[in-house]
Length: 131
Length: 75
Image (cartoon, rainbow over all chains, first blue to last red; front, side, top):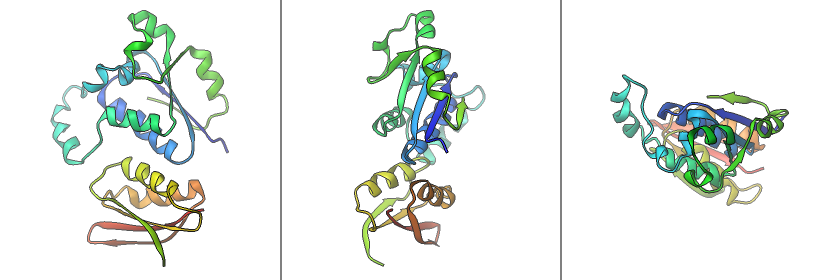
């Protein structure tokens, strides 16, 4: 059985962020090695400013109250927790170049890599998830 | 049963109960028992699944008025 979980975060909304970081922190807390490859809009999830203002899907804005009521942690809290648990963040170099972003635009401790970096890690990971 | 440590995770939503349980179990020794108290109903299945992943044993679990109690012996 593989002890590695590989996640691709390719979307940048609030719901996407919860899917990515809940699975990642739960896996890391279950003694799994976890790597997340952030690409395209997924880069929002670890962007120093954008991660504080991720958008709800259109028409779902009324759920803000539900999030508060359920006492769900914020995305910056989950990011910090994930890193504390050893989850490794890889930002996609190509997308960063397209968007004019540098490593300094993101939370500390990330690595920058290309598709091959992720593929090499994911080749014996189970499961590999895409959000 | 000798409880070494109690974790009060009431009111917390997924994935916090699991993350906090992991941290709490890291702080006790092998063979010692952690009591986890939660209100997140997802924990009903999540805590036993988490314990299994780390080889820990759920000695007992009970529900009292929407509060869940787990007694986990560290592997």
